[in-house]
Image (cartoon, rainbow, N blue to C red; front, top):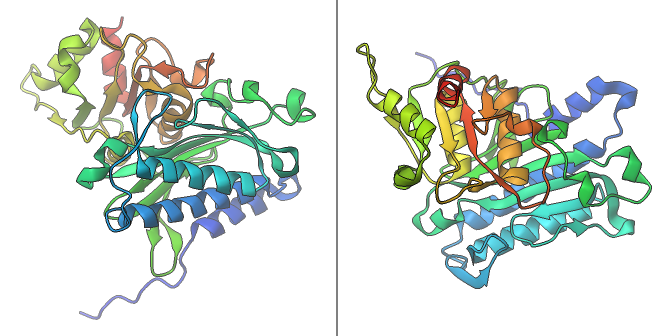
Length: 337
């Protein structure tokens, strides 16, 4: 059999973004395009440092804790600096919120733009030493017109997730994958290290309506509230001869959600008797992942309401998260009544 010729019409992330801009015509300013290009550059930079972390002494603790009270890894701190510097230099941002920083960064007037970026620079960093997949999560808001004259402030990010104009994540592992949406479906790209470009490999991602996998940290099972216990029992010990669901939990939200987007099923990090408000951060973890999930045809909920409808009251607020296949999440909601 003749060897198949390589595809010579590759669609890069840059080409895809520019294509979206051209389709908008005169309404497009190009600012979001430049901002997304800055984010893909930071992803390449962080991916390079993740790959050689052991070689350049980036494994281990930096000797500080972040606002969440978690010990910061050296690579956490470096990734945060990379993100902040690149986003500021893009001249397209007004407000930055990072998991690693106590307060929001208000960009100096000479570098200021019209967008706000909320991000977790390195999600799952407790897995760094073990070589498990980790990632960067981001969400983008546009400065609201009322504050455009003042240049943007924290109120511009204390808005429901449904008002985001784009969201995504980059996953660093055996390959580097960037998945994002501008509100018109979800596309996935894989970094070709030889070209130095993200190539479209997963166009128009759609979550299956039902999956066969559940992803919960069952180490917390003794603290789970009754609706979660009842739901998990229903899929682990199903009636009517149905096959039980498989458990898959990596402990890195990016990796667990990435698998859920592709294979279906349900990812959950509920509130419980120990963490009464949940564990995941609303602005830069729950909102971006819920945005992507809904754009891919899935459902994202706290158990009592749609995640993207929540109005944040603080930049590091937490919330319960259940997201994934429409039928699986709706099955869970039945146990919440």
